[in-house]
Image 1 (cartoon, rainbow, N blue to C red):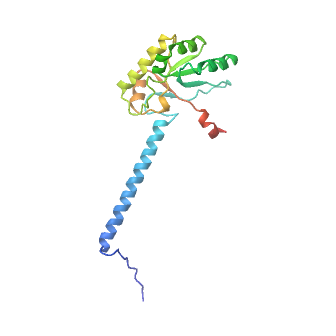
Image 2: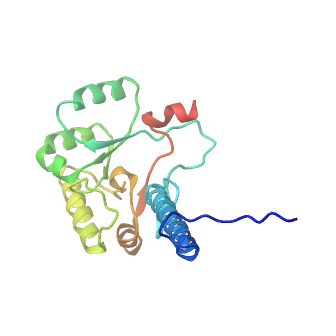
Length: 197
């Protein structure tokens, strides 16, 4: 005699309705999982240090020379510049300072001191807001306004650009590519040292 397995549905729910609810719950779970995975992938894409959708991105330069490209972000301000300039001068080291336009506008003398000491000023946008969904026109304003301020404090030659927080998606890289600009990111930072050590 064969035993039959019987599905028992909750009271008031027939077997067919129970199966449909179960299928719906699986579909909903699959959709939620898909959204979470897509969001996670999107976050990784916009924060990627070695890849962007359009244009050129530099995170390191391969060389046989024992050199480090030292960069600082988010200034300039008058409260920290003296100590930084002193340490760099004592070690005979030059660095690139990725400046925020509105900070440079507020502290132009700090920018002038950096340039006079032989350091390079790079563009880190005017407002330092995340530029993920920025249109090319908005990117143009952020970048060109800061470039003009960098020029007024004495920087000459090409001005390199670093996206705020290292995030970028379509509009910003598109603007940079259309204007022959390169995104400069990094491969080691103080917060990531434990990852490499």
